[in-house]
Image (cartoon, rainbow, N blue to C red):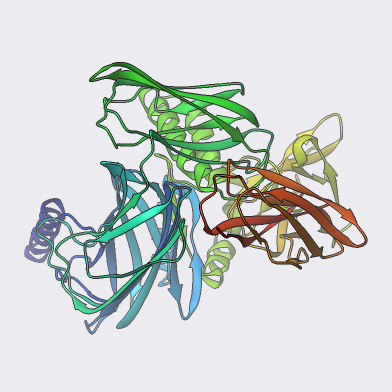
Length: 594
């Protein structure tokens, strides 16, 4: 009893410590027996800032100096506008990427695998933008964690600000080795970049810049901040827009006016937009940014920002093309999905609507973003297989956890068993059909990563069917789906088939240098792999897209450099498309001379 009370007191102290400290870079805390932090050996941060969106990857290396294996909690707080897009940890040199699982099931699997003495990791939102990762076991030595997130930048006085949270209030974390790298691309001329630490910064062209910083034994007392100052404009416009499956795209529209506005309103006409967030904006000062997230159907749109300025009613107008381009995992999709899932999840909780809650879970998996009902779960493949073997007899009771995703992968399939047929259905979602008796007790599919879904019997087709998909973040490779049939007499039969996702055979090379002066016509010739059906050049000005014509074994086209383009090197993208509408994006540059 005395021992129990001591443990309870330690637990209370642990919770008090968590509540009084703002964990910014993240801190690994052993559970119960050790309250001191593990040593943060190194932290590597790499961010890619394009327009007004930053995509950041952080790699943490912690050292366990205790003489025992422990369970550790890792806590961190992200910027207000950030959305977590991925979590992984390293197990015996292997990178274990997390999958999104329903909260209750994720906790059950984590605790079960933990009791087996295995190696799971669990990441969930604690509150606001603070997250917790539980890892077991943390052996004596190093533990490595990888986190990725995307965010829209804030702004002050027309300068856009990127801030990586290195230290919170009352935090005294020591980072033995810290490394930071940033690449910056802006449609507006970059004038200067100020940093909160003595970083090396180079403006390589009018629209491109790089920043780097390294330090040993860094005791951070403030965030690592970049203040990006660009040439002034009445209204700065940043648009990130693309499809990630289906006919409708996702957009993030950021507007920075040169006047203060009360009750500002953003309106878009000429194209159809829907499911936009937020529904209203607070008053802003001159040089601050408003960001609107939403869905759209492609086309040219008129964008209007209006509100009351100190000198009276003010209205800004501009024209932008919302492109008909496909970019898997585009950041606008992730940013929009988190807002939509929060709205949907909060509504489901308030109304206690179970159907809406299940929809939230399915969409969370589809978009690869956490919801109020989902958690990131990472388990090494060998440990997951051990778990599945142990609980094979229970899989019939698992709920259907995921829904379709439109066009996320290639549908080429190598069938290993004659029990399967794969059919193309509207919008490209594959369908598994299994020939099994209608009175079978159950037919379930085990997907890569351990997901288990129940098939339903179709009375018209006289088969068991299910649609299947992978999250949009799935890497290229060969995967296997297993199906377990339980007949009405209790007999079981296991079947499997393989499918391939990704397009490694898509490749291309630009044969000529893309350069010229403002007003010049520039030719482009591309040699692409045989499977390539279309080639498109996404140009940096006004989201312009150029489709190249195929002739003489090459893809060719001509584009004009706008007359008001500033000299410098400007980023562009070459997009290769095959017959299955799979795409590969190759980064390139256009050199503009005086």
